[in-house]
Length: 156
Length: 282
Ligand SMILES: Cc1cc2nc3c(=O)[nH]c(=O)nc-3n(C[C@H](O)[C@H](O)[C@H](O)COP(=O)(O)OP(=O)(O)OC[C@H]3O[C@@H](n4cnc5c(N)ncnc54)[C@H](O)[C@@H]3O)c2cc1C
Ligand code: FES
Ligand code: FES
View 1 (cartoon, rainbow over the protein chains, first blue to last red):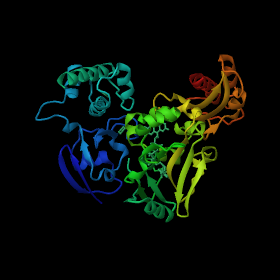
View 2 (cartoon, each protein chain N blue to C red):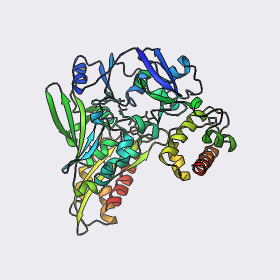
View 3 (cartoon, chains in turn yellow, orange):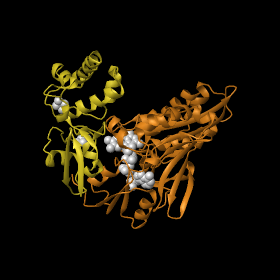
View 4 (cartoon, chains in turn red, yellow):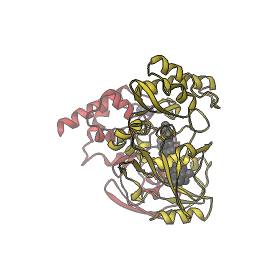
């Protein structure tokens, strides 16, 4: 089946089997391997991307469901070589260790701040309930999101 | 994990969806996909054809028509959690929606999908029973309504007929539903409820004049708890009457047991969460 979508500002059209998962389409057909597959059972959030501006788990959606959609992946966050404030905050606050969960964490966090620009620590922890990290103990991730919220508000 | 092969159709009308569904049991409706797709990946479900109804925008609205709140079947959990109309008129439902899974699940999953799927661990059913909701369904022979009390019929079973679609959920507008809540004891990893308790209560002069209690996650399917309701109706509302009524939780009901939570513990937690829910609206 034909599926077309705009990914990180670029239009793509492909022929896919209906059972192709969106994450598999992004990674294998579009070669955008920044979006990871952790659990493949909808739990861990490593595959989190934005579809029409909302965070979703790309392992729990078929590519054909995203026909006509506007998609942003971790590769599309930076503008003109300048990291997104969330990426910068993760870097500066040691919000990652192995980095496996990081693309999903960052996409989830960007979506969280869109809905709630100035979250409390508790709200950040609740907002990341769908994203698991096996390295950091979450402490520095929460710190990163907090720092990004501050810098994004300062910039606005 | 790759699901088995299937055909895919995105429908542009409800009638088209009903007629495709009628063509075979192996054809499945696809709404938010957040119960169906995980099941397909495990090949617990192998539909021949997926009938994607997510483009039917007329079923994505929430409105107050005076006598009831109307919620389209395709409203997402996020919409239900954030809706002012729901928060004001039937907070038990927004409470339940706001604690489903995680934000990404709530962005995609729909109330219609959750109620059609009717997982024993689903959150909405406990709230739906407490709120005395009505399910509006449509099939090839027309539409009908099903009361919440008659809707949940078994493990993953509902009164929804084979060729029928759920189109709308109606919640009566009344002071009792405006004074409702849903509290939950979530499994810490999956976030599904071990115990979820919905309560709607009305009182006059400090006495409980009416109460409805619904439990999710406790039995093989959601149930109303007449034991608690009868123990509290007509009684003065205070901590000892509430505690005594909550002691009746799940009495005479078959209670689930799994490798995380035994039957005994689930029963004990049902009492605790019933007490919390009733106290919250008293
Ligand atoms: C990680 C994760 C955590 C979750 N945690 C929770 C939780 O804590 N609490 C909870 O309650 N749920 C939880 N869920 C389930 C979630 O709420 C689902 O969204 C919901 O159960 C199904 O809704 P859907 O729109 O995604 O339906 P789908 O998956 O698209 O469909 C589910 C079933 O319903 C049928 N169906 C869908 N819509 C209709 C309709 N309008 N008429 C007739 N049949 C229809 C489909 O054919 C299918 O059989 C979780 C899911 C995930 C992936
Ligand atoms: S890979 Fe999608 S949630 Fe884990
Ligand atoms: S940094 Fe390793 S899983 Fe999060």
